[in-house]
View 1 (cartoon, rainbow, N blue to C red):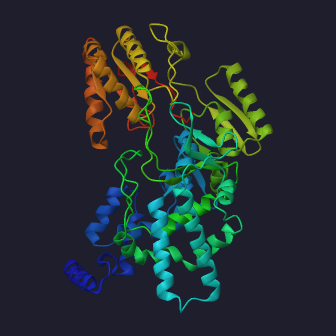
View 2 (view 1 turned 180 degrees about the vertical axis):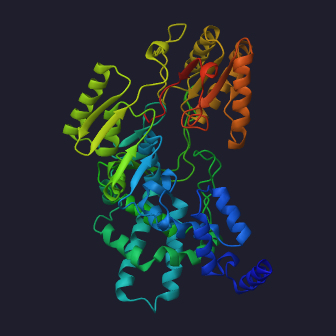
View 3 (view 1 turned 90 degrees about the vertical axis):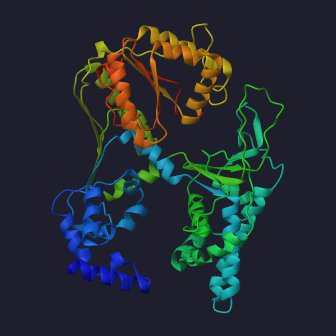
Length: 524
């Protein structure tokens, strides 16, 4: 009977335009109490919500305040805005971060963003329609700030469409894959960008306060139809992992993206840079071995360089933080990335590292500063069983340079293939090879197939590649592990650093008698 009543109530709510799963606050609170009865994963909570015909998402948010242990992804933990949205407070909390070596890169990813020309023009159109419709109701102060926002949007649009703009300041232009200065792409500080756009006389902090208090982004969201009815810039190629830069989501206000970009511009010069990319066509006269990059849509890209300030919002709120992981050394790297480039702390971190090396014990404990203590456990594999080396030249003596500007050369790919082929002849059982990116892995495999190296590799070992779909990872890993152990020549697994098979997988014993890492997955 209760289920029938809920179904009847939900049908009435749907007719009224209400969410049928949010019909009763009491049901939300009741489901929240059930969630706290025992530890549950997301699937269990979703099933509870489906059975009770109640929104499991809002029930889980309500249960957070009473929970003693909350497991959240990096994105929710490290973003103060995300924590506030779900009602998660770190005050007096013990925060334990597993695989903490990922934190700096995650912070950069969260705080880096791009703003394309279609988004800017969409926000400008939304703002024009809004002002035109409500001009008679707006106060003078609001009209003033709206005109300033309009001025910023126009300046951004003109700046991105400017032709043959090249900064004379040394080092401010980026370099293309050939190593030459590219006048169509430049890297500038936030201050330089504001001066170049001639909007340095506008107080960005005041604009952001107005956007927050007036909730303008949410109000303009209702004018999305006007944006999608307008013209869209056409492009034939996309340079960002096949993502369409022309795409404007109907579920996100264009002004909210502009607002996020303006927040980035308030960061200090040390924290980040803005890359300005304008529309250009690749030069067809370049050599066949050099890859060219095309920018299909003019855009701004903000890149966070120093994540220290972004991690400070977690440190200042939490009672204590435990950074756990198997690749946390050297300590100087972690210290610089998360706690700042302070001379005293860096010196102490280096001393701590030297103590651990000198003592050569399984466990090492040291204090870097008053608030930072390190503890290192011994490895399950003794150091005498591990051989580590750096291969800088191939079998023919050719130097292998895996910097972005040269790693796609045919000669480099061929030398890498010959090296892998020789190693396969010496390594029994499993062999795991990590590439710096998916695109580079695909490029190398294509070259090897063209030259016949890939067929030779298959004769040496059974070849497996990291699947594109996460659903196929377990199946691929199972097949690789069986062949690596059972086949006389073993098997080789081609993976990508920071990919689906680089974290949380135990390549034990014969599954990985050798691991080869190609280049480094960092910017030049």
